Amino acid sequence: MLQERPKPDPATFIGGGKVLALAAACAEADIDVVICDSELTPAQVRQLEDRLTGTVIDRTQLILDIFARRARTREGKWQVELAQLKYLLPRLVGSGAALSRLGGGIGTRGPGETKLETDRRRIRLRIKTIQREIDQVRQRRTQLRERRQKQSVPIVALVGYTNAGKTTLFNRLTREQAVASDALFVTLDPLLRRVRLPDRRELLISDTVGFIDRLPHALIAAFRATLEEVGEADLALHVIDAANPDRDQQIGAVRRVLEEVGAAEVQVLDVYNKADALTVDERRRIGDRDPTAALVSARTGEGVDELIQMVVSRVALDTRRVTISFDGGDNFDRQQITRLYRVARVISHVAADGRIIIEADVPRRYIERLTTPVPTGVATDAM
Ligand SMILES: Nc1nc2c(ncn2[C@@H]2O[C@H](COP(=O)(O)OP(=O)(O)OP(=O)(O)O)[C@@H](O)[C@H]2O)c(=O)[nH]1
Ligand SMILES: [Mg+2]
Image 1 (cartoon, helix red, strand yellow):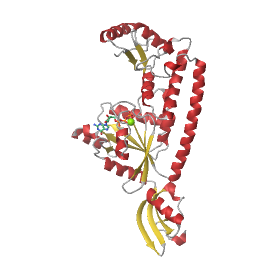
Image 2: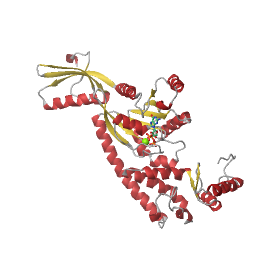
Image 3: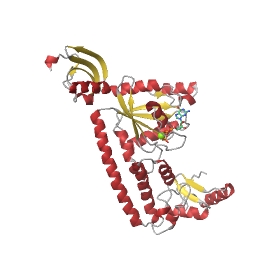
Image 4: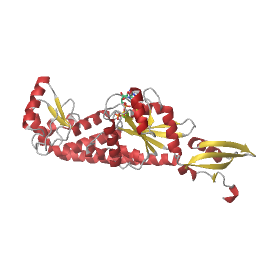
């Protein structure tokens, strides 16, 4: 049901007449849950529930509910619970009614029935505990990130609107079976996998939670850690559901959210997905409009090889060609050679007089870690 009003009714959000119409419609179709696509005040929820038979939830609570179902890792679960408690806290004021709404069924998940008796003080305590836990997980994650950066493996993050096909593409690229299904927000926690490119270099690819328009602010804060990963990526693949009628609006929403979480600086490659669901005409239009974008089908695998090539060249932009001489009899040098093959694109490899001379395109941030690299074309003596 839609209603156009200059401003929401403070008591019932929609107008009084509309409430009656809604109540009648609910009774007729035997509706259990009414979901409002805006945020409601606790008073509005109570008013509406008095007049309608059934549960009333708002947009934020629905998103929290979906998040709660999808959270898999410890941090994901904590973050969801934190967001739920913060959402709940102001709604507890002077009333047990807000809490008693947490029965069973959709829209009522949350801290749950076991916490029905908890008062605000206990909720605050719980919030503190969770925040401490999250801080610890974050510290651990920072350490992991630092280790990753030391390894100098480029990171590619998949971002995009919910249901765009990020996880399906992630599976294609990494051949892993993360959960992909036609439900919203299937991925809540960042997933990270190592991928070996055709030229034997390695990349880390991360899958992320889907973006939605008008992400409630409480959730932005709660999921900042998840989205922070994107800000540190070398490249973000913006996966777009090319077959969705709301495609352009979704593209705009994702770009806005990326800015909101401070990831606006990351270079982005647009990936139009679900090519298999497009007509020839639609494909051409996308190509005309956005010639630098990739057009793929994560489902059939079409265009994925080209996408990998595009990723390789985007990530390779930040490399320098160097020639390095190694001692073939030295253990450390031999380890370095193995490393080099993993992170760089090797152009030539020559063994002579116990030395190994390798010419390669090396990621800039890896260069200083190599022993005496010499830019190609510069004589060794000049260094
Ligand atoms: N026709 C078609 N469907 C696809 C393609 N890629 C993904 N899908 C379907 O789109 C739905 C969503 O795919 P997911 O990979 O779970 O999407 P996601 O972006 O990870 O979604 P969230 O994790 O919820 O943000 C699933 O039903 C997929 O099978 C594709 O190339 N073509
Ligand atoms: Mg997903």
